[in-house]
Image 1 (tube, rainbow, N blue to C red):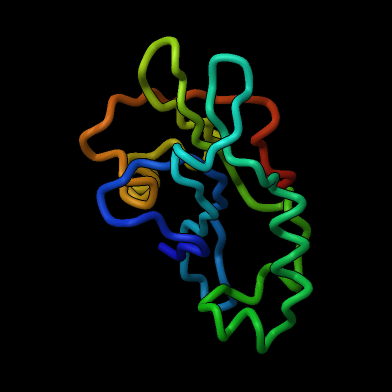
Image 2 (tube, one colour):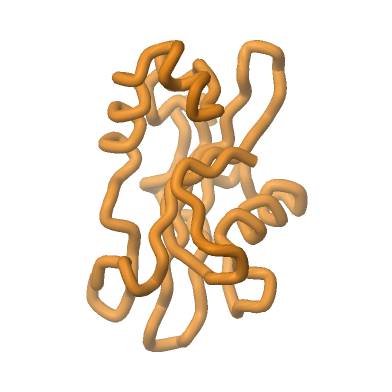
Length: 139
């Protein structure tokens, strides 16, 4: 798991993520998160203020050296943001639970466990849902 912005241990958060495979074939979840106190309201939900395209392009601009310095894989430089399976974690204030939106390719026990760990949801109520926004072009 690679976390670009990490929440303090144990504090649940919202954010975006990708399931990426680097040149060596290693699969990782790469995330960008916000604490709930920093999250943006969206109706009854709290969500991460940054989007997939925005974050991917910012990481792409870092170049090979900048990506390596941050521990990010080189895939950001060589691919488009929609090529890899991705998703978003939001907080549903009405139902008092987190919603993990995930590309179907990431809806495996192993990937969900990584996502739950990255967003510190181990003791939180959450559900997993598909959404047409979070489908990779390789699906």
